[in-house]
View 1 (tube, rainbow, N blue to C red):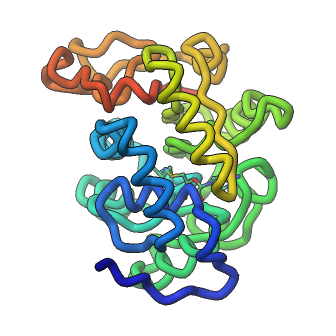
View 2: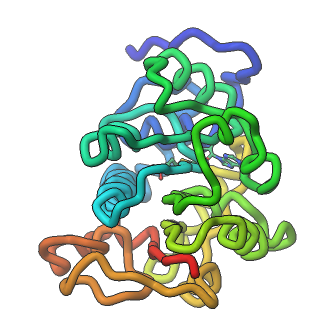
Length: 274
Ligand SMILES: C[S@@+](CC[C@H](N)C(=O)[O-])C[C@H]1O[C@@H](n2cnc3c(N)ncnc32)[C@H](O)[C@@H]1O
């Protein structure tokens, strides 16, 4: 039987949270019985759930590595999630030893785990802020202590915009971030879609998240493409054309193999800011 971890201050272990659900899909232990109950229900219908999470996570890691190789030294990871294998700072610092990474999340579970996990090296920090408040994120004193916004930044917003409703205009929020970044900055986004999924799977997915602390809003390819309007889409190499693709395909050695059922749950793209 799985034992629940201690409950950090501010955390409600009885209501599933997107951060803990994702941790469970990735095989982590920072989750409670309430999370596992609904996640197991989702997995009954979507057996590719673990592949979905890892296809997204691997895109996030490949994008961070690729951006570091383009010369990006400072990264902001919004909706960063619970610490897992291959965290953003581990990927970045392996490429650029003097790199800096700021993690941003609103979930107190993420804050508690990240603070316990992150060594205080002066190169990495975690802030509690809401994605929907770009000034609250970008003007946070702890972010400003590490990130020089007059220099290019790698902004990672992966697997989180689908928790923002249309009424809150996630497209405007992304435009606000992109406009605040120095020329030569990059933005990497991934986003849940139901485009190639059975309606029943999509309905159960929506229902599971409706029972969690946040609803989910899967979007179509056209709606995801709108996040990149007016920005230059970049390609990580000849095998991936510039444009929106499923997460497994971005930068994959073998796109046909990477095009799995799991990968097809999320679109992604990377753009360069003018
Ligand atoms: C599915 S996880 C994604 C983790 C990581 N970005 C990745 O792609 O592997 C989504 C994360 O976004 C966070 N999140 C959701 N809505 C948020 C918001 N409005 N502001 C900040 N973080 C948010 C959740 O707490 C969770 O940790």
